[in-house]
Image (cartoon, rainbow, N blue to C red; front, side, top):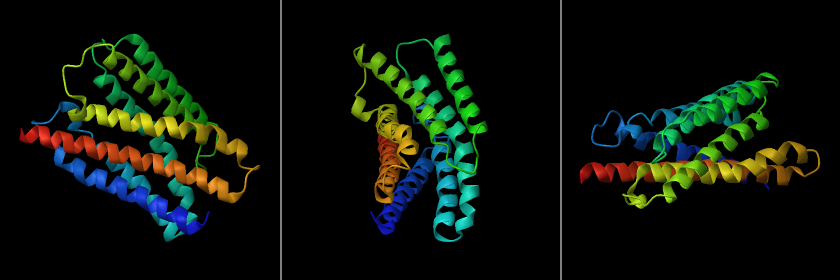
Length: 224
C-alpha cells in the first residue's frame, strides 16, 4: 500500500472531522434542540485541533510529529470522558447508578496509568484500546436498555441514537486493530501495517459521518 493512498485516507478523515465541526456549530446554545447536543460541538472542536497538528506534522514539518502525538495522547482522556458521559446521559430507563460511575472511574484510571508508563510522544495504542473498550461497553449498555423497553420515539430521527451508533461502530472495529498492531508490527510488512492504520482512520471518519447525521436530525427536529 502506497504512502499516497494512506495520505488520501488521512485527508478524508480530516475532511470528515472538519465538516462535523462546522455543522456542529449550528447547534451551539440552541434551545430548540435536545440539551445534550448544545455542547457537543466541543468534541469535534478538539478533533479539529488534533487533526490539524497531525496535518502539519505529515505535510509541513515532520519533526512536529512528536508534539502532535503528545497532543493526541492527552486528548484521549477528553475523548473517553466526553463520549462516555454523553452515553450515560442518553441511556434510557435507568438511574445513573453507582456502577456506571465505577466503570467510568476505572477506565479513567487505567488510561492515565498506561499514558504515564509510556512515552507521551509515541501513540499509546494500549491506552487507546482501553478507552475505546470502555466506550463500547457503555454503548452496549445503551442498546441493552433501549431495546428492552418499547421505544417511544423514532430512533432513525433520534440524534443520540446516531451518535452512539457511530461510536459503537468505530470503537468495535478499532479495538482489534489496537490490540494486535503492536504485537504484529515486527512480524508484518509495512504495507500491511499501513493498511491497519488506514482502517483505523476510516473508523473515525465513519464515526464523524454518523455525528453529522445526528446534527442534521437535530436541525430537522428544530424546524418541525
